[in-house]
Image (cartoon, rainbow, N blue to C red; front, side):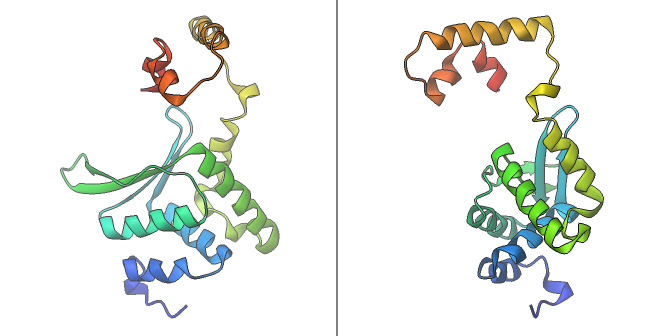
Length: 173
């Protein structure tokens, strides 16, 4: 690929990946998540990737788009040490597609095509979206039933209506 180790986190490098075959693009995202990503699955389920170079993370965003991995926009934040950092979340739809793509590469090339030390975190993250494993409290079940009852009365539903629902509005926050 003619990529110098010192230029790996340069936006020109990721620009090269945009023109490469899908397997190379997926492996770039794999390496980026291993290095700069956090997969949380216990309390707050998310896959967050961070970088202090906005332009570089913007090119990662283009790469995620080309792979059709749904994600948030790049957001500027101040970390706990007062430094500016840019973050992006890969949404569950994107993670499910990413997981499928990684498994295809693992089956084809072996376990090192996966997320290395973060593969178990990814597996656990994906498992949390198996609705059979979710345990709800009585209050949560009552909320869910009330929402379902309210929504059943509406012929067509939109995200806007969901955001305005008295209970869902708080839950969606």
